[in-house]
Every structure is written in C-alpha cells, then in structure tokens.
Length: 222
Length: 222
DNA sequence: CATCTCTTGCACCGATGGGTGCACTATCTT
DNA sequence: AAGATAGTGCACCCATCGGTGCAAGAGATG
Image 1 (cartoon, helix red, strand yellow):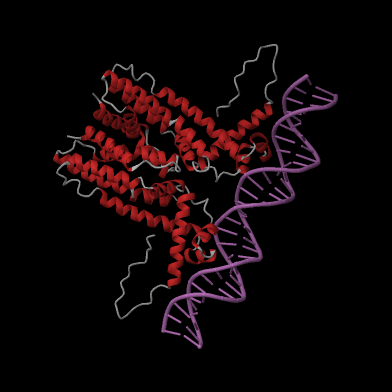
Image 2 (image 1 turned 180 degrees about the vertical axis):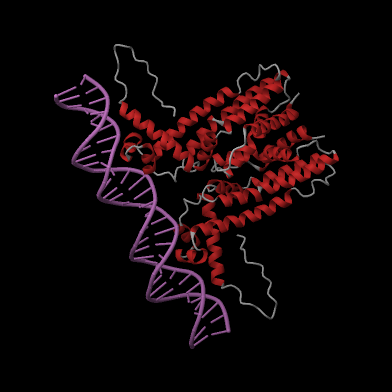
C-alpha cells in the first residue's frame, strides 16, 4: 500500500537507526485498513474504531501515529493522488512519434479507459468528489494531478501533431478535452450514480474506447 | 418551490374541504428551507434543527409533516427529479424536422448546456451523487429520468436522422452519448471537484457548447 | 539484562444529532 | 362560540463518534 518511507540514503558504516519496526507495522496496517474503508464507505461513514478493528490495532495507536482522523485521511489520499499523477504522466508518452497515428490513438484510448475504469481508481475519484467540500485543497490537488496532467500531456501532443499536419486541432486544449470525454465520459458518469453496479467487461470497455477514438478521429483527423 | 397540491377539481357547491392551510404553509416553508440546506451542505451535514430554524417552524412540525429526515429528503429530491425529467423531455423536441440541422444542433447544444450549468441543477446532481450509496434508488431514478431521458430522446432523433441520411450515425445511442459528453463533459466534471468555484459566463458556455457540437458534426455529419 | 519506546485495553469525556413526549397556544372549520 | 386540528417550545432520551488518560504489557535496542 505504497509506504512512504522517505528514501533517505544512509552512508553505510554510519547506520542511523531505522524507524522502530513496530511503528512501521502499525502504520502499514492502519493505512491499508483505512484505505479500504474510506474507499468503500467514505470519510464520514468510516469510524476510527472501525479502522482500528480492521487493522487489528488499538484505537490509541491510530492517534499516536496519525494525529487525528483528518490527517490520516489527507495523508492517504495525497499518497494515492501522487501515484495517480505518475500514471498520468506516462500514459500519453510517445504519441507524437507514432508512425500510425490512428492506431496509436486507439491504443491510447484503450489504455486510458482500462486504467481509469478500475474499481480502486473509480472509488478514489468518487471519494474525492464526495469530500470536495470538506477537503477542497485535496480535491484541487487531485484534479490537477490526475485528469489535469493527462489533459496537459494530450494538449501538448495534439499541438505538436497539429503543427505537423497529422491532426486538425487548432484548439489543442479543447481537442484534448473532447478526446478524454469521448473515451471516458460515460464510464465515469455511470459509476458516480451507481457505485455498486458491476463494471463493464474489458471487451466492452475496449469497444467503448474504440468508438470514442473513432469519433475523435473523424472530427479531428487531417 | 413546486408545491404538489394534487390538481383535483372540485365541483362548485359541493366544496370538499381543502387541506388545512396551516399544514400547507408549514410544509412549504420546510420544503424550501430543506431544499436550500440540502443542496448547499448535503444530507448528512444538514441538521433537522437547522432546517427548522431556517424555515421558522418548530422541529416537531417537521416530524409531524414528513415523518423523518430520510422521508423529507427523498420526497424533495424526487420532486426535483420529476421536474428535471420534464425539462429533459422537451429539450430535444423538433430536432428531426429542422431544415438546417447543423444550426439546430448548435442551438440544442447551447440550450442543453445552459440548462445544465445552472447552480441548482449542478448542485442537485452533485447532491444525488453524494448520497448515491445511502439512497441508491434515488440515484437510479434521477439517472434514468434526467440524463437518461435526454439520451433516449437524442437516440431516437439520431436514429431518424440517420435513416434519412442527414446524419451518419449507425450507432445512434453511442452518438447520443458522444453528443452529450462533448457538450457537457467538462462543465459537469469540473463542478464535482470544485463546487465553490464560480461558473463560466454564458458566453464561455456558448463557446464550449459550440465547440462540442462542431466536433460532433465533424464526426457524425453526413 | 536494563532501559526506552511503542502498543494495548478500557473506561471515559463531550459534542452532535435524530427523534419523542407533553402541555400549551394558535388557527381552522362548522 | 366551540370543538377539532395543527403548530410551538422545551426538556429529554439515546446512540454515535472523535478524541483522551492511564496503567500495564510487549517488543526493540544497546
């Protein structure tokens, strides 16, 4: 569950004592349990006692390790937001160099949708939306890091492709938005209203992505 | 605030006694106050005492008139869902008969976005999403009535336009989804993450809608 | 082994909030 | 005017929940 031990490199021979193994274990257990519960039931509907029970840890230890419930929450969500941002980063890579642009865009669309349509991702997104009024800064951070970064990367790629004449996208930013919503729109939307409904099969997702990308190409292809 | 006095016509001279004016007034005051607070702060963060205070009504009267908090909530939301569904109904009307389809679609896109981008509508949508786990039936109802109905109407229109050759949309349902997300996507999405942010100006909304519709026409125009 | 640190269990506090009981008053209706 | 009906105010119950205090035990470290 992505433990953020600060990667401080310690000169061998001068071994600083590492963190107490007990706190490591406790924090990990709490993080995992809390993540599960927050993602499943939201912030307000998850009790600290509940987390303690699932983590098989005393309630006191949670407070000793994380301060209070809000800190625990923001720390966890911020961690996931970071990793989401990294995913976003590498998604678009190599698009401008593709020999066969339509094929590359179809691949990108499928990858994008497959990545986003995973339960954990959808749940995280939903959780952040649910708590956007209680934790506006968190919502902002996520929005900028995850969808925002993808959008920025797409915009950049489309700008370059437009300059080269491989795409007709004078407003690259808008084209990026259109691409995203064509591919992801219905999936993201549906999940918000019916978080318990079963997800689409990988095949259905691929068809959805393909249709979206095809529409995009019909609109923006040169 | 849309009082649902059943429009029963009473033969004059045989005047059935109407409802007690006191309950009418109380219910209306409660409905208005509760609507405001639910939309602004959500279900959990709105207290019954708070509603009573804003409605200038005793807490007891709320319980006498609505039973409990959940009933009050569902009754209100269901009411708005109904009116939303009616709006949806008339949005698409007359599209198939339009002489100038591109122009008609642009008008439709603008109307659609302008309707949906109003604070009350966005808040209602957000509220229902927030409570989709506590009130799944409500979320379902809304989803079917509001966006679902629009989608159905669009699908029907696109089917007919495709048959006539005015549009190239073999998969009319998908085309309807694409149309909706192209026009509404970014607005709906952004609001979920930043409900306090100021809305776009009408002009900006029109440009957004125009861009979406243009992309749609480029993809699906015959 | 000795010491220091973290974890545990459990009782407990205080605030919040949905919902009720009841006696009293205000308002309709006939 | 008189009895029914609805609203009021207020104290109150109870469950939930975030957070704390503390004494004792388990584990780490040197």
